[in-house]
Amino acid sequence: MNLYEFEAKEILAQYGIPLPDGRVAQSAAEAEAVAKAMPGHKFAVKAQIMAGGRGLAGGIQMAATPSQVGTIAGKLLGSRLTTPQTRPEGDLVERVYVETAVESEKDFFLAVLVDQATAMINVLGSAAGGVDFEDRVAKDSTIVSALPVRLGGQIADADADAFLSGIGFPAAHLAQGRDIMRAMVKVFVNADATLIEINPLTLTKDGTLCAVDAKMTLDNNSLFRHPEFTGLQSSAAVDEVEMQAQKDEINLVRLDGNIGVVVNGAGLALATQDMLADAGGKAANFMDIRTTATSLQVARGIGILLADPKVKVILVNVHGGGMTPCDTVVEALALALAWSKRKLPLVIRLAGQNAEYALDMLNNRMVAHHRADGIKDAVARAIKLAA
Image (cartoon, rainbow, N blue to C red; front, side, top):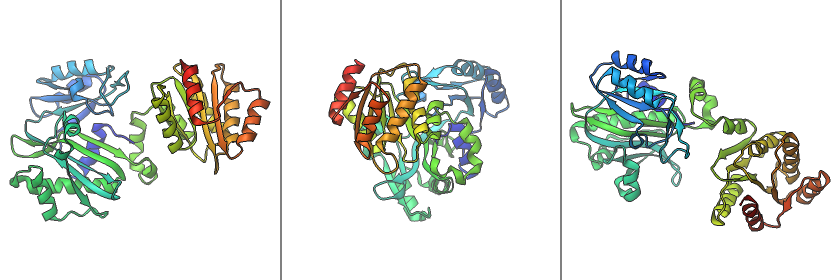
């Protein structure tokens, strides 16, 4: 679960990580009132969306007065902000974060995540923090250094100092840098996070360190251990359709193509996506039917595709096995078609458990379809029908 900046900062603040004074607002008047109540004479007004790249897209603007804060907030709220990490239509701005502006002497990047190759927590750091950090890393990955951390989260002073010195921390600020690193790792472990990122971690002109921007992702599978995060779940910017699919035991991500795909298994789904892309087609979604999904749940997932006006054809690529035999998916397909007023061309490739029985079901229930003998054939037929 991704968190808004203000939510991430609320958690980081509990662990003593230094932050600028800030408050969230949902109207221009509220934003102006927040600024009036804050210390300082300069403010940052920050659109609250999940995607990065806000600064370069106009989602972070500076203001010299509370009235200017209100004006900027009024323009951002209700608008759609488009960055390289959003969908083409952009993300709706429903909140802004009003923060005391910080004068920077030097910007650093710090993050905590799990290195999947070593299964160890890693602290990442760079002296190239700031709004264009990702572009810089894309051009030169060597600007990021890594410090492996044992599962317990302990970092020896010597290791921390060597790491921070290596990314350009002044000697006078090593102690504070160590405290921030250790606090980040503690949050990471205690909150069951999968990512914590501070960019920039700013060395201010008055000689203190301050987490000016923060990003945090929590592990959805561990949320049952964290009732304190329930409110965050309700406020997270998530696609309601995708969330409904999750409840129906289907991992679904909506994309911008015109070929709806019904697939069981993440690996098979990714292979289908790749084959469509290589052949010149565009998937309208990623779908992974979990082994625990019933035919009724799968039918509701297929109904999402039938209701999507962008979808011109549905490609069913299923390899039956385990708890999801082919006939379960076909039964779901027949139900979804019976519920929907919209009929689309169907390309169906089935293999594995109960494949022949499922194909007989399609014929017996008079479901019009194009039968494909293999994935390559199915992909080619779907692309042709979607044209």
